[in-house]
Amino acid sequence: MRYHIITYGCQMNVHESEKIAGLLKKHGHKEGVGIDDADIIVFNTCCIRDTAEKRALGNIGALKKRKNADKNLIIAVVGCMTQQKGFAEKLRAVYPFVDIILGTNNLSLLPRLIELNDKKNAVKIEQDDTYDADAPVETFRTSYPNAWVNIMYGCNNFCSYCIVPYVRGREISRKPADILAEISFLLDGGYKEITLLGQNVNSYRYESFDFKYLLSKIAETDKKFRLRFMTSHPKDFNRGVIDVIKSSKNICKHIHLPAQSGSDRILKLMNRSYTSAQYIDLAAAIYDNIDGALLSTDLMVGFPTETEEDFDCTLGLVERCNFSQAFTFVYSPRAGTASANMPDLSAEIKKSRITRLIKAQNKVTKAVSDGFKGKTLEILIEDERDGRLVGRTDNGRLVSVEKSGGQKIGDFADVKILSSKSASLEGVFVGE
Ligand code: 5AD
Ligand code: SF4
Image 1 (cartoon, rainbow, N blue to C red):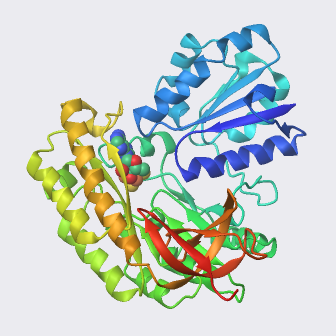
Image 2 (cartoon, rainbow, N blue to C red):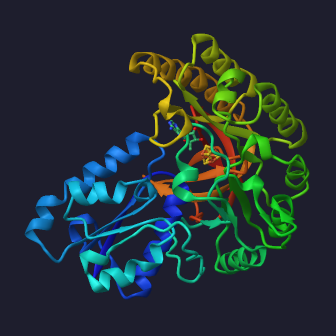
């Protein structure tokens, strides 16, 4: 049968969809050309914010007519959204035409349930199942020259706004030997960039091996490749990691370090376990020690009780930390989390703050980009669009270059930066 997977949410989910595709291919299914061509439609969902959740539910609902007309169509809903308390029952009641509902740890059951096509037994959401479809041979990778590699699953932090620890369960770190074997397989297969994934990579620990050890072990190879990782938590960021990055030619000088807020009062309510001064210290240590490092972040506005003063502190952090990029979010209450019972701020206040935050960050983003003008930098070419090649600098800036010679996706090339457009740069290949 032909399948189509629709992915919502983060890179973690994109990679999980690659594993689902690998499983389906292993069982003889083929990728369809699009949703209309597919006999199996898999919704790999996300519930971190209500926007992603609403989008998924809308798209599932839109299949009702087609399913009524075509009883052989198989619809599966998997991933984070299904792990919420009472969700499977609710989904069954509202969309009885959904065939299979699986939790994040039960994905390996998907091919078998497709084969059985038996609705009565097609719901499984157990957090303690050990799902580790990391067998590198099976994952159907879609992001060459980059390959995603999970180093850990779950989260122990319980930030008061966040649903992830409830739906993904507690932290489990993978064995270093398995991670190293997967990466070695990928590098032998020609991948040029490895991105390590975890909700909080800095708390990676397997027996006596920590994240610093893992990074230095992975970077220890003669092969030329780029090593990235996400996401880092400021409270667990071990400064020894800075030394490892500094002394390695493979580890990229870009750190994604979500700050969430610049107000100490809000950070405390968020249960983030650091103050803005501690965050600023860490940012300074990164900038001072790693030549050319860039820092990106996640910021949230409209957390319950956030005042204009609190919000001003977040604007202040944007100025102070010179973020190369910020992913900005409007707080949305998630049922079951600690902050869900606190009074939500009005939509007007949230809208006004997110608009001002984006404007402030755009100014910083543009200034960081302008700083690249005239420099010659190495990029890894990742994509080709409209006759132009698109790559990334070591510190994470996107660069678009007119195709002029034999360069192709997966090549490293030197580029002279001529101009900048907010978060991206334009340049020409050097030496032609
Ligand atoms: N509302 C808005 N944004 C959220 N995030 C996590 N939970 C919520 C929520 N309830 C944001 C955080 C996190 C990013 C992945 O999503 O900024 O770092
Ligand atoms: Fe959510 Fe906090 Fe864990 Fe990140 S660290 S996944 S924001 S609970």
